[in-house]
Length: 178
Image 1 (spheres, rainbow, N blue to C red):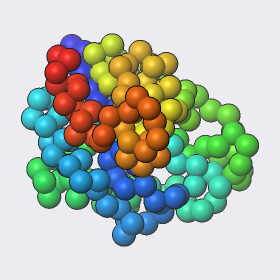
Image 2: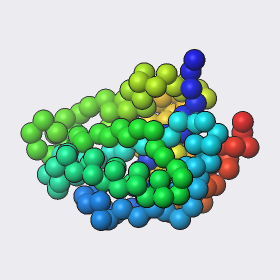
Image 3: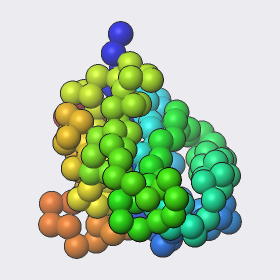
C-alpha cells in the first residue's frame, strides 16, 4: 500500500529561519505550523522533514547536533498534539566544507535523494505527495521526485512571486486539491 506524504523543509518553513541553526535553544516554530502539521497527522498523511544542513559540512556544528535540534522540534510540535514521522537531512556541500562532507551528493536539494529515500523507507506514493519549502531548491527537489510542490513566503521565501503565505496556506491548498 503506498502512502501519501507531506515533505516539509525545516528552516523557514516549519521553524523560524536562523542562519545555520546549531542549537535546540534556537528552535522556534513558525506561527500556525504546529496546527498545520496536526491537520496532516489527523488526515493520516505522513509528515517528513527534508532539510539541507551544510553547516555540518562547513564545520559550524557537528552532525550529532542535528538529532538534538530535531528532538526539540518534535517536543514543540508534541505540545500542540502534532508530530513529524521522520527527519531526513543532507550534511554535505559540493564546494565548501571539510573532509567527507565536501562532496557532490544525490541528497542535497534540489536533487531528490532525500525524498526518494523516504519513499523507499515508508512506501510513499510520490505522485500523491507534496513538498513544501521556502526556497526554489525545495520545489526543485519535489518536482524532481515527482511530487507537487508549493513555496511559502516565510523564511527565505518572502519575495517569491508564486508562493503562498505560510505552511497553513500550503496545507489549505493541499486540502482543496484532494
